[in-house]
Length: 111
Image (cartoon, rainbow, N blue to C red; front, side, top):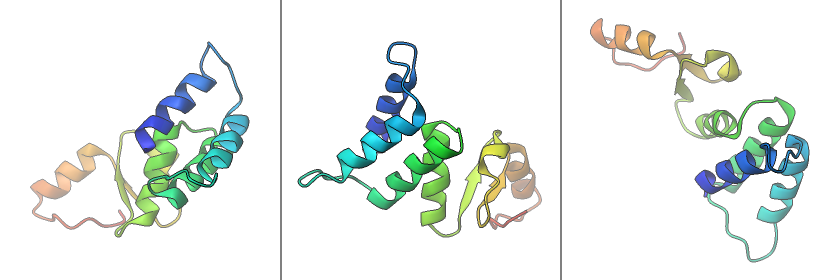
């Protein structure tokens, strides 16, 4: 489950173990590809681990980016806009979304 992998990444890169993100990503990608291991949203998780290792963002933000790209429309609402400025993903702050809702435009768009 993505939630469990998030916790594993947090613990392994934390003070106790202090592993580098690229090492954690490599090991977890190897693990989820073992015969007999079932992984929810496997392609999303693989992309998440790539972003986690290469972009320097935490697992949760990397997962939201990868998951958003896998659904239509690709849209994220977050105060942390900088981590989500990827091609093809619309990003709004909660304030922007509420303002659009108050204006009567409930459509999610790339604004």
